[in-house]
Length: 102
Image (tube, rainbow, N blue to C red; front, top):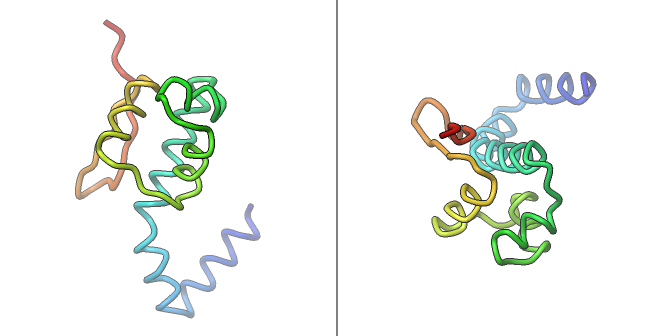
């Protein structure tokens, strides 16, 4: 992974358009990482998460790949199925917080 990180850093330093494109995609990439991380932390496969949400495994795969952005309804279902809260602020495009134990 270091080679990839080094390549990206070098490319961003010499190519302002590359840097701009990465910055524009940052919220999507952070959502993808947060969703996948929350699913894995819950010990669920894509299929199991889909079943909990009443959707298909392929719909979960599209969300995790970034090919489809979630609707508010989908975010609600994701939060419920994964037991997390999604927080979006100007400082942090997306943060995933586990629900507090009651």
